Image 1 (cartoon, rainbow, N blue to C red):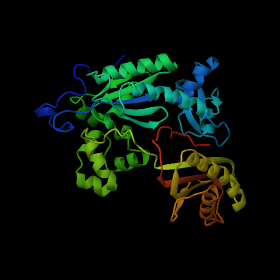
Image 2: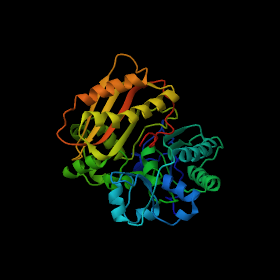
Image 3: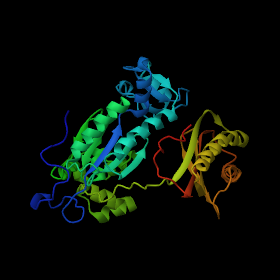
Image 4: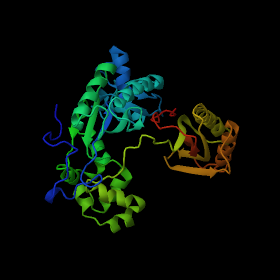
Length: 383
């Protein structure tokens, strides 16, 4: 199984000379960060639980004309099927594709098993979704000095306890650990050491950088920024001018530097639900009916977890895929589902009459209080 270089642990001390530009934690000791990412998680759970699906192209999501792929098995990915792809496009690419409705209770149960394995090694766990997390193992519970060893142990135990495979990346910061976990997918491990870090980043296309989305990547391309080396050649002032608050982040990651700590107490910043409709909605009454289940879903989630919020955001996507949002912040917290429905309804009414049909509606509650750690956010409220 290939990994990155194994002669240097990711927690080695920074040397002088060529390594003087490597990121530091404190003065000379670097963090040891592992990023674990389950392989095709939703689809893999379905294939595990139903042997007849193994080896076949599977997609979790809606199969209707306006459905969306939530997850695709690796057999489906060979045909170009990807998450967030319209189901009709996925079916065109892979006529034999098997669509399955999501079973979030099953996914959460496996996620709890995985996180229990993480907790055997460190309390510093930052969940990103049901199937993905950062772990800081600099000072770990089993006092294992090499992060790679811990990553191998975690992957082996996940396989033995759940029957599923996980990919992992180990490095000296979160940005590089995230990049590393994608290098040998599926069922792989990759290590980026301090000696490898800067050169690894320079050679990588910026489109593969975590935190650089398609729109930003296109903008960078127009500015002549295609690789990490191109990004590193830009000044901090230039990147701030072109990318605003994100400029410093791009400046430092181009140098392999990411000072963000693993945050085990990370809190959810918003709770939302959305739905794509089988037919476009043209009148206010139809839109209200489409919005009602989303309001109910958001409210039930918040009520079960004692979450309250003050800002309501309505998301609307029209037939031509143009997307807009409208928000309102109330004086106190939203205390009842009827209050959430009222504010959302006001935002909706202001859009009518509409010039074209509405294909998607979404509701988000933010500016939260009483929140709990964000351990299950991935698609937990997606319809």
